[in-house]
Length: 125
Image (cartoon, rainbow, N blue to C red):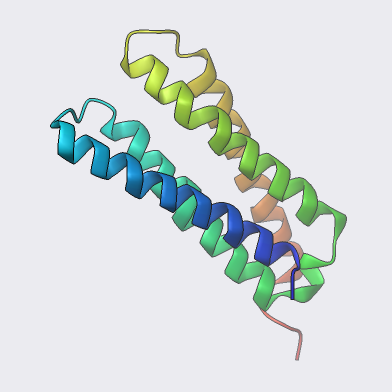
């Protein structure tokens, strides 16, 4: 089934695949300056998205809500903006994108907290 949980997992799998490639590139080159951005891609992009995907798969009522789509959009936007923003900041550029992405990611987590308290975990008994 390709519900909202599936889309969280697809994005997470894309993030971890990119993160692995980036990690291999850093190891081969010996240049680990962007390790912080790499870590955020793997942690927020893979682990967090995977956990969200599990939650929505286990809690169909939450997955069926329109708020789940907003949550997905905020979560994806957060990673897409934050990770390059961290890389730019590490290289001496502005921190604006990192900050904006962090705010989107925090907003995503607030939506998740609301969803969790509203729907609980798993199917109702």
